[in-house]
Each structure stands twice: as C-alpha cells, then as structure tokens.
Length: 110
Image 1 (cartoon, helix red, strand yellow):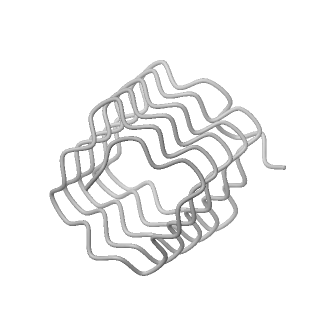
Image 2 (cartoon, one colour; image 1 turned 30 degrees about the horizontal axis):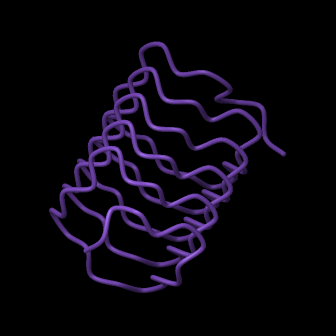
Image 3 (spheres, helix red, strand yellow; image 1 turned 90 degrees about the vertical axis):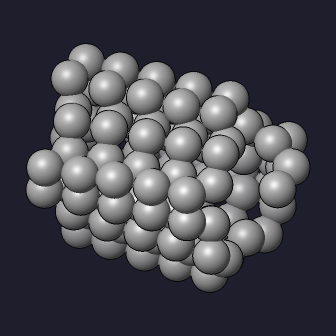
C-alpha cells in the first residue's frame, strides 16, 4: 500500500499488520477498516475517519490523530505513546490495555 494516500477511501479495508510508518493518510476514510497490529508510527492521520475501525495492538507511537473521527473504534492494546489526539472525536472508543503515556488531547471530545 502507498504511504502517501491523503483523502483516500479505504473504508472497510483489511489492513492487518500493514507497515505504514510515517504514512500520510490525512483526511483518509478508514471507517470500519481492520488495522490490527498495523505499524502507524509517526503516521499523519489528521482529519481521518476511523469510526468503527479496528486498531487492536496497533502501533500509533507519535501519530498525528488530530481532528479525526475515532468514534466506536477499538484501540485495545494499541500504543498511543506521545500521539496527538487534539480535537479527535473519541465517543465510544475502546482503550483497554492501550499505552497512553504522553498522549496530547485525549479526553477532549469534539
């Protein structure tokens, strides 16, 4: 998969274990996509739609998730260390066992 895919439509895609380190997915539609165990370290997901996405055990270390829709997404066991969630919609998001050290903006639902 291309690492430069802003505004692309990947809704419902099977992206389990994909390597997207430093990918530009700003504004992408990833609603309902399965990104379990995906490596999204330092990826730009600003403004992306991750509603209902599965990100179980995903690596989102230092990822930019500002202003994205994460409603009802499953981030159980995910690493969100130093991720930017400023302005993100987080209603119903699952974070059981997620690593949240240094996260910016979590808890400020839009």
